[in-house]
Length: 208
Image (cartoon, rainbow, N blue to C red; front, side, top):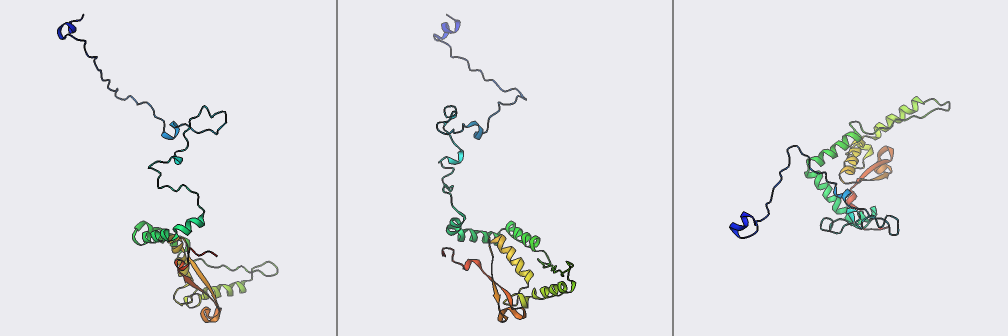
């Protein structure tokens, strides 16, 4: 019997030794969760018994994915259900978020530019050469039509401003809508003008 047992009349408690890590000693590598998990093999395959039963993390039904859409929807179904909410929130960001404002402004400035999208006529003669006189006349007529009094039914917006409005609406609302108006009543001497229409006036739930 040891001296400890003679004095205290019992067996000594085992000593617990704490081992501190050595400075500079790298911890044991840990595999990422996605790699540490086993993959699911098709039933009946040769690997079915080797691989575990766990599948992709995206298929798990837990609190992390309870708000995740699990049903495949087409683009038309998404628009039908959520178009008004998505557009409303996007427009709110454009009004109140500096980053969204900057994005819409950059789209208009870089897609349309200071001069707008212009036409470059290249009519050719029978011999294959450019018809300079005809092309010059077309370019002048195009520039004249692009003025607000000819291209806009209200006579207030030039064609370049219409292009910038379309670019901003596409970036901020996801769409833009124009009506092509023919006739001298609104189209002036060219008989053709544009009418901008707010896309939100269209009934999304209406099916044709």
